[in-house]
Amino acid sequence: MNKVCIDGNNLTIEDVIKVARNFFQVDLDNSVLKKIDDSRKVVDKFVKEEKIVYGVTTGFGELCNIFISNDKAEILQRNLIKSHACGVGNPLDIETVRAIMLLRVNSLIKGYSGIRLSTLNTLIEMINKKVHPVIPEKGSLGASGDLAPLAHMVLPMIGEGEAYYNGERLSGREAMILADIDTVDLIAKEGLALINGTQVMTAIAALNIYDSIELSKIADIVSSVTFESLNGIIDAFDEKVHKLRPHKGQINTASNLRRILENSNMVSRQGQLRVQDAYSLRCIPQVHGASKDSINYVKDVVETEMNSVTDNPLIFTNEEEVISAGNFHGQPIALSMDFLSIALSEIANISERRIERMVNPTLSGLSPFLIEKSGLNSGFMLVQYSAASLVSENKILSHPASVDSIPSSANQEDHVSMGTIAARKTRNILNNVRKVLAMELLCACQALDLRGIKGLGKGTKIVYEMIREQIPKITEDKIMYVDINKCEEILKSGNVVKEVEKEIGKLE
Image (cartoon, rainbow, N blue to C red; front, top):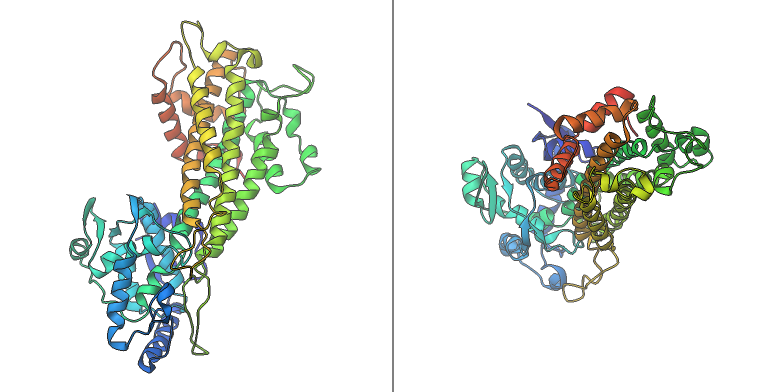
């Protein structure tokens, strides 16, 4: 049985994908068991002594000055979950929910949150037995963490809310009974421990980053097919050029393009057909490379957050000390997701400009809109329109969420990150970028057919043949969205990158 063993410190993006998309089970490393137990003992001690501890013997947010007696501790925690489950909108998809659950467990097992091992095991059982809480996508401010969506995650644990099980949307209690998982009576601190963190925004961010890395490779491959269709000047990718401006992403992109285009008879040399290319061809390494550098920066931020403690208050067992602080604030993820939004948008931006160069006969030297008998046929005219629409939408979505803040909880929580909004809009941008690249690839294959193929590069030959196996050349107008969707599915499958890398080595 495939499993991911977690210890709170070494979770990777790849591990998240295994659990979220490939349904790997989750196991705890033995090293965390004592930390969890010791942390809980400190909480129990404070409860017994009726020490003033935020969220343990007090209310929440602006209600932190109201003392809650021992006999009300369990009611306090249950009320917290019920009252905070205020999410709205469509449910998050299953892979995101699984990533959220995994990340919350990974944070809590570090031993600074005071939760019981038995409660954590319930959450782990839900992952392993595929009980997936229904979590609405909207409602988080991203500071005090993702309170509303995480409260929805907890509802089935206490026999409330809703969950998916065996493909059905059921009541939380029914799903837990069918999966043979005992529900939990939360005790002091546990409700707060479960919902006070950044795991929703971070889960979405982790999936975004994994897909962004793949998308950046796809962009290099697709742009190489376009480069051949327009007889691009290969000299611009010369290693000597890029060593003079040694940004890692730029150097790696130029290397990718040279290897993908190796042995191509479709590229040209400087002065052979023209002196230099337009920027959308000549500057592919500089533009794609800058986006890659941004993606790698964001990846470091996200993996740090995945292995962090984002609870409040924090329990320091050695000192028997409780500190109320602000690790729940989502600013690192908010800023990095806004940054990623811009980086991804630029990949689609330059892709659409390459589409324009192919469909415009003045720029391509090919039949207008890449179709014979143009006029009678419109060909790829509206493909460029659609790409332009998506690119424009991405520009709107790239407006930073993190620059906004609306005070909450009677102004106690007076600056929030909007990090979950940033992560969600980045996912929308990412999906738009993939669609634009699919449109570019369709155009590029058609342009190659019209140009006349004299010998493709080592990587581009593979991609061209993969597309033409499923999508033939267009000789007269047809319903285009079918081919666009089919091409997008080919890109989404991961097979394009996989097959190209088999031939030319790993893309960076």
